[in-house]
Each structure stands twice: as structure tokens, then as C-alpha cells.
Length: 353
Picture 1 (cartoon, rainbow, N blue to C red):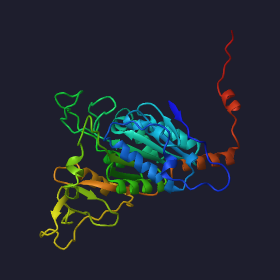
Picture 2: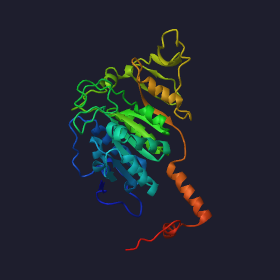
Picture 3: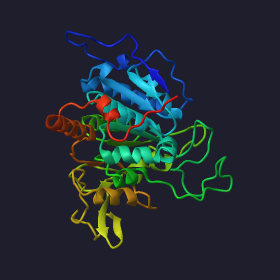
Picture 4: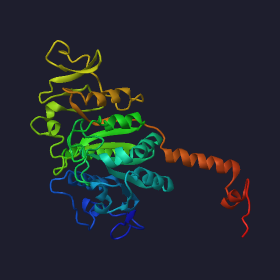
């Protein structure tokens, strides 16, 4: 495990300087493959961090293993480069030890959803105040092109030369199923959209899971182009806006209604929804995650648009707040504990030479 340190040390005393993007750029050479989507995500993070009004020494960036794991070296904050899949566990420990810190996790689809699957599920269900950025390029990039938990079924890779038989995870559905209180999706090259999602995640108290569709130009180039290409994305993607009906299309001419078997796409010029009535209205603040889950799941079907934006954002006390409240109540009732007394209590024995 590597610990990265803030270049130049932490600000102390007096009025804190106004931070800019350059203050979050480290002295390390950024080394990803040319055209990698990680560059765009890094740029978005370094742009948003100084806007949050948080002292630089209060940020911690934690990563696991994968191309995204280089993030702590490139963001000029404190950071941990940990082991495969365990970034949420390390980040949880950091947040519980010092709840004042703003803790961000950079992870990939393989790191988060394969060996780290249980760790990310439990961090989300506990509602630990972590901001988890999951870069999804649908491939193992660092280890040179094996299929990942989000690779499409029957995909041919170096580890599945005849096609993968696994059905892929749908990360948004997984996060919603784990009870995450903030769930969102953005795209590496949608810079304005990505920055706004990051701002919203930063303002959220509790677990925030952001899937970022990201391109790997070497081992899975164009994985998201059928949805994100400039010429077709208006007709292939659905931008979620809280409190507004689900409408998409270059001419805003398609909508989403609920019918037999779930959600369906309708032509707004047709008889099914000519007056705009009957369209599903998005409600990210809805306590019941069923609608968000339904939208996420529908997005995996042929002919249904890929939903992006904030699927769920509900208020619930963060785990570290509940834990500290519980500890305070116990101390008030029973007084401060003693580790020495604890070790000497119960059934003990002595080992003689």
C-alpha cells in the first residue's frame, strides 16, 4: 500500500487561500495511454475539487488496482494506493477514523465488481460517506484486455477467445440493490455533465456511487460509441432530470411510459402520448428505489435509451454519524472504556515457560 502526500504541505492558520485547479495537480507525470478516458475524469475532478470549499489537506483519494488506481498520484491531496478490490474497505476505515475528511474512491469495473464486489456492496449498504467513482470501460485494461464483470455477453477477449458466457453486471442496478443513497451515471467526454454529477455527489451526505462510462482506446476502443457518438447520442441516451418527464431524442420526440411488462418508448407524435400525458416522471428523491431500478434495468434492453444522470439521491444518516452517536451514548452511560481492563477480563490464563 502506498501513501501519497500533498506537495508543499497543508495550509495552516489564518485565511485559507482560494484554491484553483492547478492546486490539485501533482508534480507526477500523468501516464495513461493516449486517448484514455481517464484523462477526462482526472480533469473533471481537478476542476471540481477547488469549487467545494474544502481545504486541500481534508481530501483523501483512495484507489485499488487498475489503470484508474494511479489517481492518488495525480491529484495533489492525501491518498492511498491500496490492493485489488479493497479500496472501499480502506476508505471506510479512513472515514470512520476521521469523519471530517472528504474521502473519494477511484476504481474500475474489474477492481470494484469482481474481487472487490463484496467490499463495494457493504460500503454502499452501510451508507459510509464515500464518493466512489467507478470507471467502466467494460474490459481489464491494466492486464491487457481480459473480459470484465461489465463486458457484454459473448464478448471475445484474450481470456474468452470463444466468447464470454457471463451475463454482465448492470452497475447502477447493483448499487441501487445495495441500498446506495446516491447513484448516478455520467460519461468521460461529457465534461459539463460529469462535473455537475461530481458536484452533486460531493454535496451528498452518505455513500455516493458514480458510474463513469469511459473509453479504453487500446483494448476496448469504442465500447460506448453506439450510445455516446455525437451524431446519435441525443437519440440513444436519456438524460434524467428530477421532477421532469422522461423525454429524449434530438427533436425531443420520444418519451417513456409504463405499460404491460414495464417501461416502453413511445413516439410523442403518436396516439399513445400525443398530449404528453402518461409519461413517467423521474423522482430521484423517492425513498423507494423501485422506479430508479426500473429505469436502470430498462436501459439494458435493445431499443431503450441509455439513462444518464442522477438515479437516486435520498437523505439518510451516514454510517460514521450513527457510529459516533452510538459511541457517545455508551460512554455517557458506562464511562470511558479501558483496553487494559478489557484484555484482563473474562476467562484468562497464564502461559509459563
